[in-house]
Length: 100
Image 1 (tube, one colour):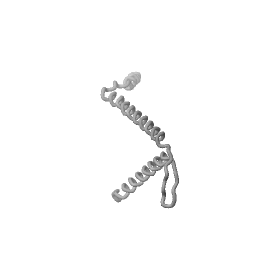
Image 2: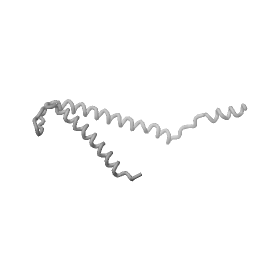
Image 3: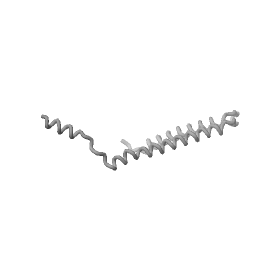
């Protein structure tokens, strides 16, 4: 029984990591840093967008008009476009899917 315990402890020793495995493990860091740089750049862009578009603009409707800050028009248009894009994607995927 003593021999088996020795064999079990030897079998539990970690194997040396291959060069390829180490490269794969450390390679994810490059992607992480690239996405961090992109996220920071997008955040800076959004801050500049807000700072440059704070003036009031006149909105004309069919029955009347109003004024609003330009940044709110940009934000509302972006969100509406995103939601309509998701809805369109869902409808196209749903209608082109093979019947079950």
